[in-house]
Image (cartoon, rainbow, N blue to C red):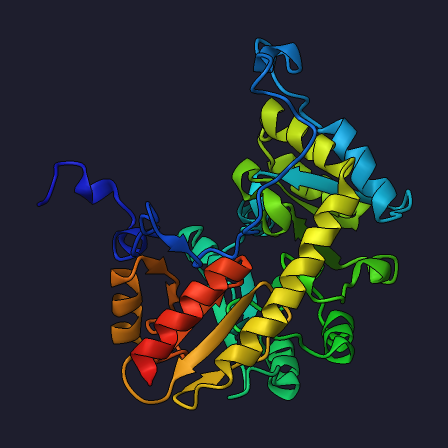
Length: 357
């Protein structure tokens, strides 16, 4: 139905599809790459009002100074570099794209990769260019370098490890990309806690490198808090775009408390890595699926005999929610499952076995 204000809509926005999140009520929820374990931090909100520990009548700390200083210390970031706290990684990706919002600028990324790189670029009217991965999802470094030379991109997004494929690309190749580009290279380490690899120690080598990290995957998805590191001048430019008070007081306080419980969170990540190995080993026993290696907290797999849509629907009927990736370019007949608790993984394996054998 057309409305009188339809003529004011941008045509490119009108044809976009909205990002939809399926209801997970009463489901074994294995679709969103969350930490499956309860967070047992030393915060007793049940016994005292929130206002006892947070002044809710006041605006939050606009600079997030407490958590910012803790993170700079944790990652040993020196004075030549700085950071920004964002409302999840999505806001940080948006801020970067807004900073480089010029009609002639190009955003470049391998595909398939995190969908928000393309979605945010397109919403802002930026030209988004893809570099297809090889069939095994490894990086086509020769094509990547060719595109860099041809297109001179303003921003290159690299998910490390990659989402939704779960694999790590060669650090040597990524270093080459950083050196060869005139623009900014953003390394998204959202799943870094499960990979054992990071570029954080390389932050001092390049003035065009940005590293994004997040609290979401380690157990705090509900507070929506991400952060990025980069050259001080670069951070200053991005910070001009950031709206004030973007992180609420409750999220700031919980993130501060979580930083005091690093050992607890690290142990949970180690548990997830162990559960991932066990889950992969069990899935690889099924000859009707292909399981891709993962360095994240999720596993991508392909249905070799039958339909991924059918498997997804029948798992849903059994109250098991995973992610159907079939509509993602180059991921036809693929599904993605988040590593859950042992109990959740066992329920998933039992149901999957019944469906594909």
